[in-house]
Length: 165
View 1 (cartoon, one colour):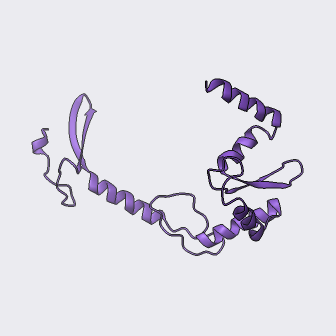
View 2 (tube, rainbow, N blue to C red; view 1 turned 45 degrees about the horizontal axis):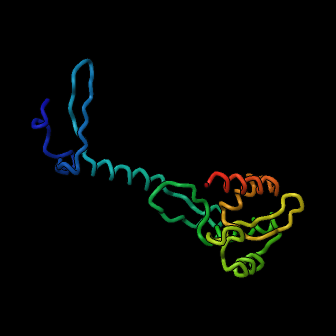
View 3 (cartoon, rainbow, N blue to C red; view 1 turned 180 degrees about the vertical axis):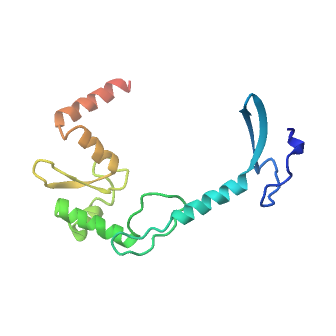
């Protein structure tokens, strides 16, 4: 079947233009079959499927969660998300919202190690449980991967200095 013989528009009336057409060639039973899809119909169908599945509500207050444009793992509304983080900080570190804010402003909102990124994570000693400072996520993970071992950290510094030439 030649391209000319195909319909000029999809079933919903969208014209097959170069921007709106996806050309497909399939081989079935040894024969080459040419067809095309309407990209606009594909986009609309994808949006319909996403909207139908989006009936999420906040796990804490049951308020409907806003559509973010993609299906994700959003479980809490903005207000509850903040209060959930507060509850976690209290439970895990014994640090309430006011103490966290005081540390944050004392550090000018910057990570205590790199001084570049925003301080979002609470760093603590895993042996004693004592809170040390606020770090960015990357610096906090780096300390964790080095198992809070000062000798490992020193060797890592030497390694990087030697190999940066």
